Amino acid sequence: MSSWTEDMETLHKYGFNTVLSDEWHEYPDDGVVFRINDNKEFYSRGHTSHHPRGAYALKQRQKGIVTTLTDVVWNVGKSGVVAPVAMLDPIEIDGATVSKATLHNMAHIESMNLEIGCKVEVIRSGEIIPRIMRRIY
Image: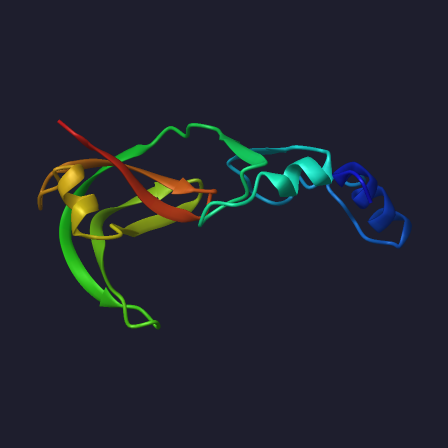
């Protein structure tokens, strides 16, 4: 097919639900993705290590909830990578109790100037993953 829209129409003809043919409001989202419709142009732009250059996401900024960073523990993931995890005073965000958030790495902690006992603003990225947005001074 020559366009993404035609691809979606073809899939719908074969019985697939697509973003063009159905409503997807039951699934949480934190924004919208825009994509070049022409497939040849889309693929000619290539990819970064994380995403295609022919598409971009426009994210909605969420209002965070303030809590206290009580500790940082180091967790070994299934791939063997050691990563810091923020331990937080429990807060409720959109009906879920949040008491932990990933801190990614030491550089991430340093860039936000995080210290045990400081106040932080927390959101649920994609309405799912707890994330510290910033330190509150």
